[in-house]
Length: 155
Image (cartoon, rainbow, N blue to C red):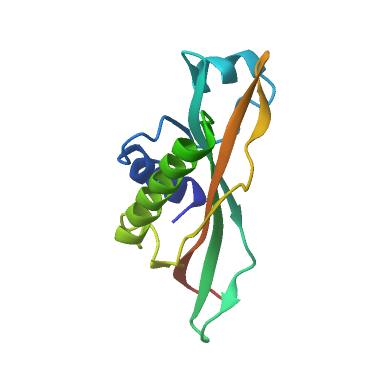
Protein backbone atom coordinates (compact mmCIF):
# COMPACT_ATOMS: atom_id res chain seq x y z
CA UNK A 1 0.00 0.00 0.00
CA UNK A 2 1.07 3.57 -0.44
CA UNK A 3 1.83 6.01 2.36
CA UNK A 4 -1.17 8.06 1.22
CA UNK A 5 -3.53 5.12 1.78
CA UNK A 6 -2.05 4.38 5.20
CA UNK A 7 -2.19 8.06 6.17
CA UNK A 8 -5.87 8.14 5.16
CA UNK A 9 -6.57 5.14 7.42
CA UNK A 10 -4.74 6.78 10.34
CA UNK A 11 -6.94 9.84 9.79
CA UNK A 12 -10.06 7.65 9.78
CA UNK A 13 -9.02 6.08 13.10
CA UNK A 14 -8.32 9.51 14.63
CA UNK A 15 -11.63 10.95 13.50
CA UNK A 16 -13.40 8.19 15.44
CA UNK A 17 -11.70 9.29 18.70
CA UNK A 18 -13.98 11.47 20.82
CA UNK A 19 -12.71 15.02 21.35
CA UNK A 20 -10.05 14.78 18.65
CA UNK A 21 -10.84 18.16 17.12
CA UNK A 22 -9.80 18.83 13.54
CA UNK A 23 -7.51 16.27 11.96
CA UNK A 24 -5.19 17.34 9.16
CA UNK A 25 -3.32 14.59 7.33
CA UNK A 26 -0.73 16.94 5.82
CA UNK A 27 1.03 20.13 6.86
CA UNK A 28 -0.88 22.10 4.24
CA UNK A 29 -1.18 25.22 6.38
CA UNK A 30 2.55 25.85 6.71
CA UNK A 31 2.40 28.76 4.26
CA UNK A 32 -1.18 29.79 5.10
CA UNK A 33 -1.17 30.81 8.78
CA UNK A 34 -4.62 32.41 8.74
CA UNK A 35 -6.12 29.23 7.28
CA UNK A 36 -4.41 27.27 10.07
CA UNK A 37 -6.03 29.56 12.62
CA UNK A 38 -9.47 28.98 11.08
CA UNK A 39 -8.87 25.22 11.07
CA UNK A 40 -7.48 24.68 14.59
CA UNK A 41 -8.91 27.51 16.72
CA UNK A 42 -12.55 27.58 17.84
CA UNK A 43 -13.80 30.04 20.44
CA UNK A 44 -10.24 30.99 21.40
CA UNK A 45 -9.28 27.36 22.10
CA UNK A 46 -7.00 25.10 20.11
CA UNK A 47 -7.85 21.47 19.41
CA UNK A 48 -6.45 19.71 16.39
CA UNK A 49 -3.79 17.37 15.16
CA UNK A 50 -1.50 16.78 12.22
CA UNK A 51 -0.30 13.45 10.86
CA UNK A 52 3.26 13.17 9.58
CA UNK A 53 4.44 10.13 7.65
CA UNK A 54 7.91 9.24 6.40
CA UNK A 55 9.06 6.19 4.46
CA UNK A 56 11.92 4.37 6.16
CA UNK A 57 14.53 2.24 4.45
CA UNK A 58 13.04 -1.21 3.69
CA UNK A 59 14.44 -4.11 5.67
CA UNK A 60 15.24 -7.50 4.21
CA UNK A 61 12.96 -10.30 5.36
CA UNK A 62 13.73 -13.18 3.00
CA UNK A 63 14.82 -13.73 -0.59
CA UNK A 64 11.28 -13.15 -1.81
CA UNK A 65 9.98 -10.50 0.65
CA UNK A 66 11.05 -7.30 2.27
CA UNK A 67 9.46 -5.18 4.97
CA UNK A 68 8.35 -1.73 3.83
CA UNK A 69 8.17 0.55 6.87
CA UNK A 70 6.53 3.93 7.37
CA UNK A 71 7.11 6.05 10.46
CA UNK A 72 4.06 7.98 11.64
CA UNK A 73 4.02 10.86 14.11
CA UNK A 74 0.74 12.37 15.24
CA UNK A 75 1.03 15.82 16.84
CA UNK A 76 -2.04 16.97 18.73
CA UNK A 77 -2.32 20.50 20.14
CA UNK A 78 -4.87 21.11 22.91
CA UNK A 79 -5.50 24.36 24.74
CA UNK A 80 -4.13 24.53 28.26
CA UNK A 81 -6.56 25.81 30.91
CA UNK A 82 -5.07 24.94 34.30
CA UNK A 83 -2.42 22.54 35.52
CA UNK A 84 -4.68 19.91 37.09
CA UNK A 85 -7.61 19.60 34.70
CA UNK A 86 -5.59 20.11 31.50
CA UNK A 87 -3.06 17.44 32.42
CA UNK A 88 -5.74 14.93 33.41
CA UNK A 89 -7.81 15.65 30.28
CA UNK A 90 -4.74 15.40 28.03
CA UNK A 91 -3.65 12.11 29.60
CA UNK A 92 -7.14 10.66 29.13
CA UNK A 93 -7.28 11.88 25.52
CA UNK A 94 -3.84 10.45 24.79
CA UNK A 95 -4.84 7.09 26.28
CA UNK A 96 -8.00 7.04 24.15
CA UNK A 97 -5.96 7.79 21.03
CA UNK A 98 -3.38 5.10 21.87
CA UNK A 99 -6.15 2.55 22.53
CA UNK A 100 -7.75 3.35 19.16
CA UNK A 101 -4.44 2.73 17.37
CA UNK A 102 -3.84 -0.50 19.31
CA UNK A 103 -7.30 -1.75 18.34
CA UNK A 104 -6.52 -1.40 14.64
CA UNK A 105 -2.94 -2.71 14.25
CA UNK A 106 -3.33 -3.21 10.48
CA UNK A 107 -4.62 0.33 9.77
CA UNK A 108 -7.82 -1.12 8.31
CA UNK A 109 -5.90 -3.54 6.10
CA UNK A 110 -3.33 -1.11 4.66
CA UNK A 111 -0.47 -2.54 6.77
CA UNK A 112 0.46 -6.00 7.99
CA UNK A 113 1.35 -4.76 11.47
CA UNK A 114 2.08 -1.62 13.47
CA UNK A 115 4.54 -1.28 16.31
CA UNK A 116 3.32 -0.37 19.77
CA UNK A 117 2.32 3.33 19.80
CA UNK A 118 4.61 5.54 21.88
CA UNK A 119 2.58 8.36 23.48
CA UNK A 120 4.09 11.46 25.10
CA UNK A 121 2.85 14.75 26.53
CA UNK A 122 5.06 17.81 26.87
CA UNK A 123 6.11 18.37 30.48
CA UNK A 124 5.07 22.01 30.39
CA UNK A 125 2.55 23.79 28.17
CA UNK A 126 4.08 26.14 25.63
CA UNK A 127 3.00 29.06 23.48
CA UNK A 128 2.31 28.06 19.88
CA UNK A 129 1.87 30.59 17.11
CA UNK A 130 -1.17 29.68 15.04
CA UNK A 131 -2.17 32.26 12.49
CA UNK A 132 -2.01 35.71 14.05
CA UNK A 133 -2.41 34.49 17.61
CA UNK A 134 -0.34 32.68 20.21
CA UNK A 135 -2.00 29.98 22.29
CA UNK A 136 -0.91 28.17 25.44
CA UNK A 137 -1.15 24.48 24.57
CA UNK A 138 -0.19 20.99 25.59
CA UNK A 139 1.49 19.04 22.81
CA UNK A 140 0.57 15.37 22.70
CA UNK A 141 2.48 13.09 20.34
CA UNK A 142 2.06 9.48 19.35
CA UNK A 143 4.58 7.73 17.14
CA UNK A 144 4.55 4.26 15.62
CA UNK A 145 5.82 2.35 12.59
CA UNK A 146 3.54 0.66 10.08
CA UNK A 147 5.05 -2.46 8.47
CA UNK A 148 4.05 -4.07 5.22
CA UNK A 149 5.51 -7.26 3.75
CA UNK A 150 5.99 -6.89 0.00
CA UNK A 151 7.29 -9.23 -2.68
CA UNK A 152 10.76 -8.47 -4.00
CA UNK A 153 10.96 -8.20 -7.75
CA UNK A 154 14.19 -8.76 -9.63
CA UNK A 155 14.89 -7.35 -13.05
